[in-house]
Image (cartoon, rainbow, N blue to C red; front, side):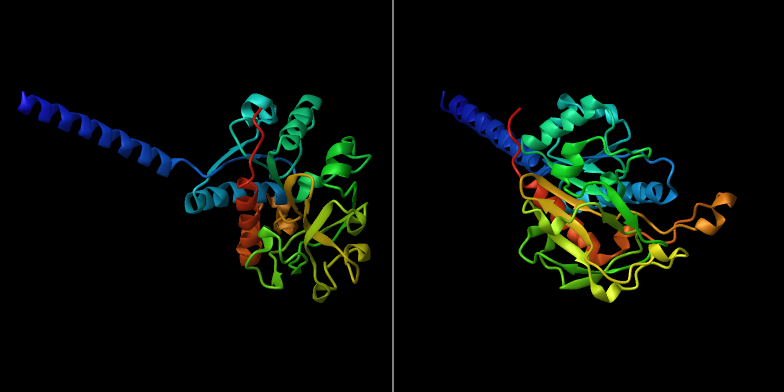
Length: 286
């Protein structure tokens, strides 16, 4: 009897230990948060280059910082059932175009979901292939309104930290150099919007910015926000995401990338700081 009792107790202890081990392993393997990146990856060589770069860089960061990263070019996945799996959405190049996709994204954000958008994801210009036909997204959420103009050719800039207390700028120097980029100017003055927290801006030491050949593509002065957050949402917009390309030989179809956005240590740290901050936000139960 005693031997059987001892055997049973030992068996139960082994089972309990194995269960605890399984729970601990599952807990250790569970990602801190889940990211889904949407992209189109067509037409503009520089935007396609950035999409490829991002879809290689973010998985490496996911392994390092213990989050999960998925990506999709299927914008029909912008629906409640699919988005429920994730805490953070990335727009790598474009935006959703269909009304039902836009509605699903807005609901996701209003329910406490998180978003980070890059460069062209904020573009809108009427008339163009990307009309300003989504007021909530461009005017309220991002806050910049329509595209105004841009620098050319893609060039590096010295970026200045505007909000040193924001989690996205933690550990950054006061200024740092970006990789080459096409920089945007916007319709609306973000400094007059109390909901917008400007995180990075172009430092005056960057001027003249751009090489032309058109004179209006070279900026000599002014205030140009580069990255910001909206205090009413869990979001960060980053104007970077347009690599320099071998445009002179584009008709030879070399499509050679001449720069990479994540080669800038400061920009990479800012983006990861921002992503980790967004991933820490709690989404409402849907």
